[in-house]
Amino acid sequence: VVRQVESGGGLVQPGGSLTLSCTAPGFTSDNCGIMWYRQPAGKEREWVSTKAYGMERYSDFVTGRFTISDDPAKDTVYLQMNSLKPEDTGLYFCKIFGNARCVGDWGQGTQVTVSS
Image (cartoon, rainbow, N blue to C red; front, side):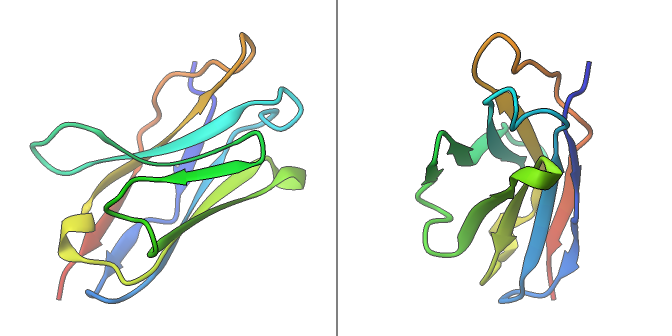
């Protein structure tokens, strides 16, 4: 069962910005965390960022450019992406994780394309 839904992707020029959303009903009350991943075409899925238990973590290739935040009232986690580069292009997924209530299959993701 897919527990989380991604949205907000699109086409943006290099240097531009996008904000992705991940809505996972009940993840706040279940005390779950959310991770963002991305998968460039033809490559493996790679971890981007995590928000859980009051902490935020970022991969080296997005530190300083991406910001993860949440709105508990909406059960939504956001990924604000600034200074986008062509190598940020890919299918972005979010994934719920944590205790036994924090289970969900991978969703369809949202496509981000950075190109001039």
